[in-house]
Image (cartoon, rainbow, N blue to C red):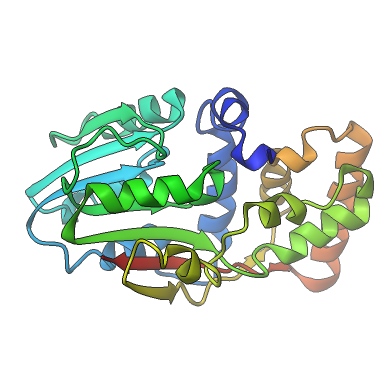
Length: 270
């Protein structure tokens, strides 16, 4: 089993709270060249969902999608936010507690959804499918709980995502292994998702968020991102110092570190 799909590790370490995820999203939010925020763009894709709908998000994390679109949520939506990690589900509840909406929260494994068949109009899986040990089982479950006209919206990364950062890590600290190896083991990207969804969904479209690259002018946000990764959990102080110096040299010589980012949505219909 890859560390990417080790549920015990994910719940107890990587996502026991939102600190690692916050380090990564901060880099994306501050330095993405696209002035239109990711979570606003994702919500834009929900316009075809009826004004009265049952909505489930699996892997909701800290519920940023709903925080950043609070004023856009239709009054008639019944929303259940869930995460495998109890810490994440608790953080989502805390983040939305002052919103005044009757949103429900629970801990859920996407491989065994505790909902009736045909219960949901919309199911959202935001950058979480590569953490599921048995994706076929999870996709079958998602198909089961969706209504005949229901929609699955899944956020995924694509080929070349964060490639410059991966190469930097491998060049400076090769003894830690190549960080892309773990992602590749998951076997799902924006480019491969349609074929994987095909047994359960009849219509699948892929939408890329563009422009999407990062132009990073500060060292510490990159270092915080690096420290949040499993690939660097065994890094020594000397390893991190080497990475810091290399990033500083890149920014000094080029004015910024350019990092390719490839992300988007797979929208699947039954």
